[in-house]
Image (cartoon, rainbow, N blue to C red; front, side, top):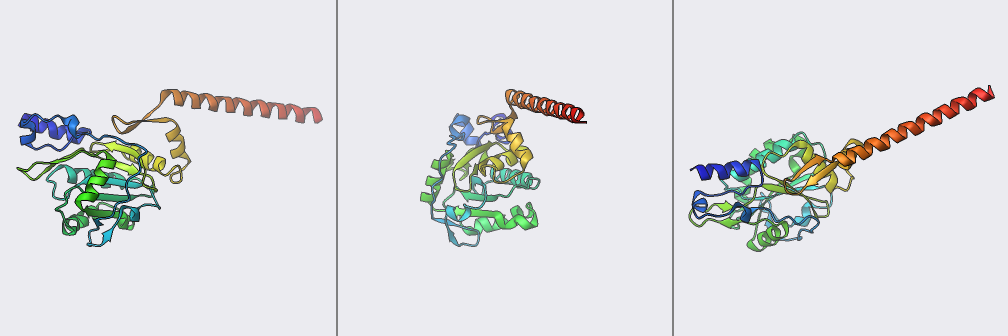
Length: 262
């Protein structure tokens, strides 16, 4: 029981996977189910997807306009997947950077009906004007294999319980479908999600303040978090000081010149 609780806490706090008790008893290593990060990799434009209404679709249908929050999991998950989606959608409530949310089931036996059962609750966590940007998809086995391989998302089905072992976290894709960032664990800060979306857009969304914060921040792939880079901050402060001094000297010379002419 203690090992099961420890694994659950690991999943909620960081990038830990979803474990069944039988898997812990078998001595599985959590590192076997951590993301294998592939930043810069292009996601495959797979077909074989269906939306919650049962319509055939492909990954490309959700690209080209905005950065994408890309979540892998499954709709019958008892704990971790729902906890992760709740956390993601609640965090996005305070992030006004344009984006799409695309969730794909890793269970090939799930159907659009499974996605449709989840959709009303997940949509209720989003602002009314953004609910059209939430897409809950199911996929064929071949599409799942292609997407999870490209994303570096290891998973395994427990034949006894029918539950899947998998990492906790999500990807941020560029509008073209390239992997920009991994945000690991459950409970990411709105600041990290916002910066990841701004960065994935290539600076095309967000404001000047976001660009300045990105210049002074460092992304740590081990934690999936942005931290302030002290050296960058010091350099920025130094450049700002020089700019102020230069402006002061220019104003002083201008005043002296005006005085002489008077």
